[in-house]
Image (cartoon, rainbow, N blue to C red; front, side, top):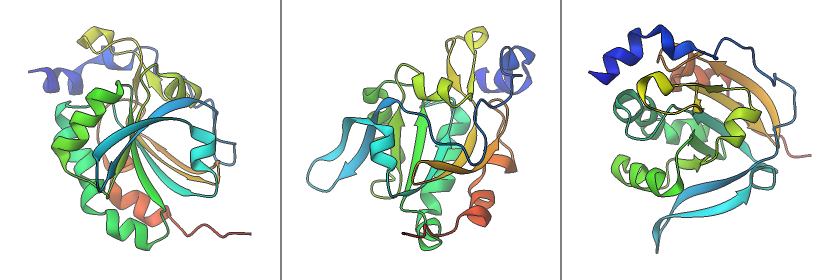
Length: 192
């Protein structure tokens, strides 16, 4: 089964041993991505945005996952954030956004399947530019998932400044990138 191979494969970490290109305190990188979010009258829609403009004056929890419809992402990782979205917002998150290297149409179908509606938005980083700029990319060609996929991670971005990074350094799912951990790290954005 593919999910067992993903968990056990050393090939999973090929080219993923490098360190973050960004760190806490750094400005969030510029990239153009598709934001997939639920609109009451239209359902899930996608819009191409400059991510720095989109994150401006926001306190965002960014959740990176290897791919839409992959077993752990679909059954465990993203559903945790959907389930705890109200708690995370009450602690200061303006928006919770799950990001993968997939096209906007695949991400839209994934969002519809998960049913998070107004709880979680999504980034479709179709070209992998943002994932690579963050230094959180990995090569999963050995399991037929392509040369650029996102490592599993969580991050807090306040007004385009990275204030927290929790990376699994691969596709594994542990407490590092779970909703409970980020819950302990989120604080309200102080508007100046």
